[in-house]
Length: 262
Image (cartoon, rainbow, N blue to C red; front, side, top):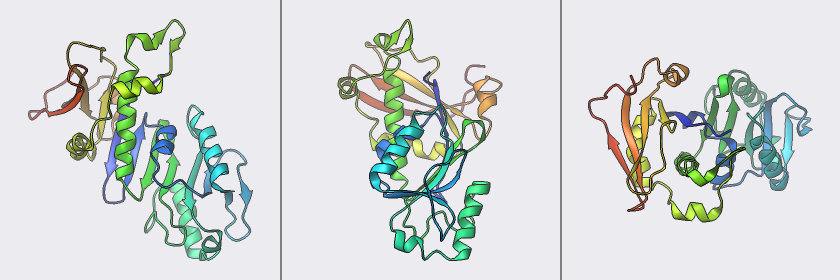
């Protein structure tokens, strides 16, 4: 079932994002540099091969990595924490202190010094957490905004009447994507300051309209996601709109932070 919201909280100091509804499949799609290898920080199943130097499990080779990520993306919620790395030779130069930092990262879901290791040359750290929250570190945080733009468009397309059936949602096809462009990066940059506060993109009351703009409310969430979803308190921060007629996205900041839905 497609969730009718996205939750985002961005920390621009450490380049990490807390999210719900973003999904590993969208991360995989947006990766500029495909991971060559993965170091498994923690998992519930026996993935990969043991490494004698680090004592972590490894998944080696781009094809094996992509197969693994595709399998994880099909799960209701990914069950594996990982960090990518480039070179087996440099991996085996990790010091006991650096290995301890990786253990700490996988255990408490926080970096000790930096989530990006010179010897790993990693671009990502992927940490599934409690309550359906994903924590993802991006070396290049621009990839996150491209990822988010893809999710927003897909959730908008999911509202089309022909996408619904007696048996639930039907997946869209590439032709549908061509009809609705991604939110441009200029619009994503307007949204960006709000995401550091914690925001829910609420698709629950969105109705597909061919004749007028469709507005997606952005609600203040901070770290109170479940309270907001239960409508205990909702503050409307902004609206992201798409017009089928003009084929344009627009962002509107609600300056007075009106109460929404209450």
